[in-house]
Amino acid sequence: QVQLVESGGGLVQAGGSLRLSCAASGIIIRVNDMGWYRQAPGKQREMVAVITSGGTTNYVDSIKGRFTISRDNDKNTVYLQMNSLKPEDTAVYYCNANIGTLAAWGMDYWGKGTLVTVSS
Image (cartoon, rainbow, N blue to C red):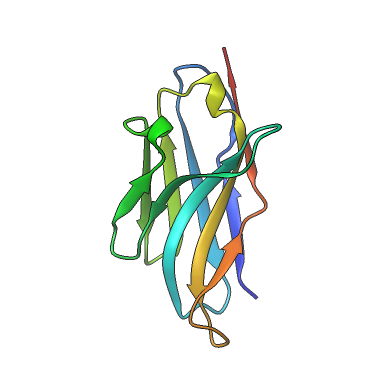
Protein backbone atom coordinates (compact mmCIF):
# COMPACT_ATOMS: atom_id res chain seq x y z
CA GLN A 1 0.00 0.00 0.00
CA VAL A 2 1.52 3.28 -1.13
CA GLN A 3 0.87 6.40 0.90
CA LEU A 4 1.68 10.06 0.35
CA VAL A 5 1.93 12.18 3.47
CA GLU A 6 2.07 15.96 3.19
CA SER A 7 3.29 18.46 5.75
CA GLY A 8 4.13 22.13 6.00
CA GLY A 9 0.84 23.91 5.45
CA GLY A 10 -0.46 26.65 7.70
CA LEU A 11 -1.36 30.30 8.05
CA VAL A 12 1.00 32.97 6.75
CA GLN A 13 0.77 36.66 5.98
CA ALA A 14 0.96 37.92 2.43
CA GLY A 15 4.55 38.15 1.31
CA GLY A 16 5.59 35.30 3.57
CA SER A 17 6.94 31.85 2.77
CA LEU A 18 6.05 28.24 3.42
CA ARG A 19 7.64 24.96 2.45
CA LEU A 20 5.51 21.93 1.75
CA SER A 21 6.85 18.40 1.88
CA CYS A 22 5.37 15.14 0.67
CA ALA A 23 6.90 11.74 1.36
CA ALA A 24 5.90 8.55 -0.42
CA SER A 25 6.06 5.30 1.51
CA GLY A 26 5.24 1.67 0.89
CA ILE A 27 6.57 -1.00 -1.44
CA ILE A 28 7.85 1.29 -4.18
CA ILE A 29 9.80 0.16 -7.21
CA ARG A 30 10.11 3.56 -8.83
CA VAL A 31 8.73 7.08 -8.49
CA ASN A 32 8.00 8.79 -11.78
CA ASP A 33 6.52 12.30 -11.95
CA MET A 34 5.73 14.05 -8.69
CA GLY A 35 3.76 17.22 -8.31
CA TRP A 36 1.61 19.61 -6.37
CA TYR A 37 -1.96 20.56 -7.12
CA ARG A 38 -4.26 22.94 -5.31
CA GLN A 39 -7.96 23.54 -4.91
CA ALA A 40 -9.31 26.85 -3.70
CA PRO A 41 -12.86 27.17 -2.32
CA GLY A 42 -15.37 27.05 -5.14
CA LYS A 43 -12.75 26.30 -7.77
CA GLN A 44 -11.50 23.26 -9.61
CA ARG A 45 -8.27 21.56 -8.68
CA GLU A 46 -5.36 22.91 -10.71
CA MET A 47 -1.80 21.81 -11.33
CA VAL A 48 0.71 24.02 -9.53
CA ALA A 49 4.05 22.37 -10.28
CA VAL A 50 5.33 19.05 -11.56
CA ILE A 51 8.81 17.53 -11.55
CA THR A 52 9.94 14.46 -13.47
CA SER A 53 12.26 11.81 -12.11
CA GLY A 54 15.03 13.50 -14.08
CA GLY A 55 14.37 16.89 -12.56
CA THR A 56 12.50 18.64 -15.37
CA THR A 57 9.96 21.05 -13.93
CA ASN A 58 6.74 22.65 -15.11
CA TYR A 59 4.79 25.40 -13.36
CA VAL A 60 1.45 27.09 -13.71
CA ASP A 61 1.95 30.67 -14.88
CA SER A 62 0.46 32.26 -11.77
CA ILE A 63 3.26 31.02 -9.49
CA LYS A 64 6.29 31.23 -11.76
CA GLY A 65 9.16 33.03 -10.08
CA ARG A 66 7.62 32.57 -6.63
CA PHE A 67 7.36 28.81 -6.11
CA THR A 68 10.04 26.16 -6.61
CA ILE A 69 9.46 22.43 -6.79
CA SER A 70 12.24 19.99 -5.97
CA ARG A 71 12.61 16.35 -5.01
CA ASP A 72 14.87 14.00 -3.14
CA ASN A 73 14.82 10.70 -4.98
CA ASP A 74 16.61 8.86 -2.17
CA LYS A 75 13.82 9.83 0.21
CA ASN A 76 10.93 9.60 -2.31
CA THR A 77 10.03 13.11 -1.24
CA VAL A 78 8.88 16.18 -3.15
CA TYR A 79 8.99 19.74 -1.87
CA LEU A 80 7.31 22.99 -2.78
CA GLN A 81 9.03 26.16 -1.62
CA MET A 82 6.50 28.97 -1.74
CA ASN A 83 7.74 32.55 -1.50
CA SER A 84 6.01 35.91 -1.87
CA LEU A 85 2.70 34.29 -1.04
CA LYS A 86 -0.50 36.05 -2.02
CA PRO A 87 -4.04 35.71 -0.65
CA GLU A 88 -5.04 34.08 -3.94
CA ASP A 89 -2.63 31.23 -3.15
CA THR A 90 -4.98 30.17 -0.36
CA ALA A 91 -6.06 26.60 -1.08
CA VAL A 92 -5.74 23.01 -0.08
CA TYR A 93 -2.53 21.73 -1.62
CA TYR A 94 -2.39 18.11 -2.71
CA CYS A 95 0.66 16.01 -3.45
CA ASN A 96 0.52 13.69 -6.44
CA ALA A 97 2.96 11.02 -7.53
CA ASN A 98 3.04 8.44 -10.27
CA ILE A 99 4.53 5.38 -8.66
CA GLY A 100 5.57 2.01 -9.94
CA THR A 101 4.91 -0.97 -7.70
CA LEU A 102 5.01 -4.74 -8.10
CA ALA A 103 1.46 -4.54 -9.43
CA ALA A 104 1.80 -1.76 -11.98
CA TRP A 105 4.38 0.23 -13.95
CA GLY A 106 2.87 3.49 -12.79
CA MET A 107 -0.23 4.54 -10.92
CA ASP A 108 -1.29 7.94 -9.65
CA TYR A 109 -1.47 8.42 -5.90
CA TRP A 110 -2.73 11.42 -3.97
CA GLY A 111 -2.09 12.80 -0.53
CA LYS A 112 -4.93 13.93 1.72
CA GLY A 113 -4.04 17.59 1.29
CA THR A 114 -2.64 20.35 3.45
CA LEU A 115 -4.29 23.72 3.91
CA VAL A 116 -2.39 26.89 3.07
CA THR A 117 -4.03 30.13 4.15
CA VAL A 118 -2.53 33.48 3.18
CA SER A 119 -3.90 36.49 5.00
CA SER A 120 -3.85 39.97 3.51
